Image (cartoon, rainbow over all chains, first blue to last red; front, side, top):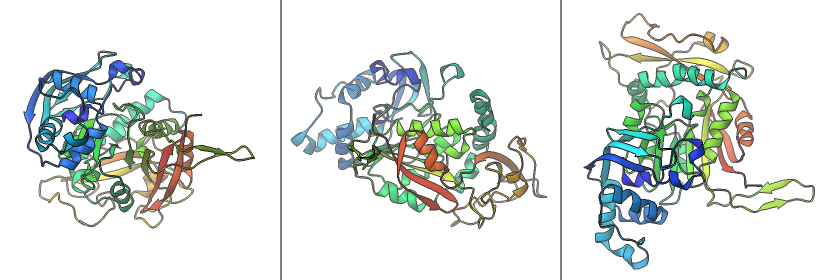
Length: 126
Length: 286
């Protein structure tokens, strides 16, 4: 699962969805892999517009990335190809292959196996 | 079906929908590669950089249409999600369409193609449309109240919108031959060919219809409580297996009614190749 994906996920439990604590979900025991994908600067710029930067910072610090800017790049910074390539690498090419995503509100854990997260809930949480 | 309660419906759909797709995933996927034109048009018409969801993505055949948008695709079937995950630059995850793991009101678009007809009660079908609508950015159009008190909405082109597709009851020219007045809750067979002896590749590469299903008009008229006949072979060859999936076939106007009950407004709808479809937006909050 891509780092970008987590920016658009929250807990599947209905009562958590409106809680600020449920976003972003938190990685635990994450095993990372790198997957080469075609670099498309326009796509990265477009995703930057949509990204919740604070949530992205939380996610990347949990995964051990230390070089993410404190502020979301805007204006001229978006023409910096090195920066866009770095973000491409983090957002799209970094795959979480195994581990868990944990809700900060209800503490439910969602398993990630072979790169795919499973959000099916046990009956008592539906 | 309306007498069926929620938990019975969940068990029923587990056996007659989810379990079947898990079993037929790879063969099903090999027959699903040609996007339907209305879906293609919807996805290609999105602005670059739009972010949306594909609820019940199956093998992810719509993830190949537009690489300039980002789609979070989900399906109940682990086997199908695995196939869908191969399509870049998108994402695929396992989720139930009534418990989607996404923040509400945050997406530009959604599609849910040939999914909602698998839910086995009217309430759950409305709920499924509701959970798609909730993900969309709210309709920002100004409400216009006319002198007679009725309220009309004219959605802005930047409002989140969803495309929903369901199988139609009215398809008398299809090889299944269902039509107006017939039973709407049916079990539809899927015949898989095993690799033993026969090739598993699609017979008709251009066909958008489900070629590997055998017409069983007796079932379409029969009771939905028909037992799953997994393993029963319809052909003399023992290399094929038949699975039955539950469908609710929509009659004319029913999708529009469900959308309205779910708190949405239809901005465009129609009939294409044995299916009803609708492009919908959320109603503004009162």
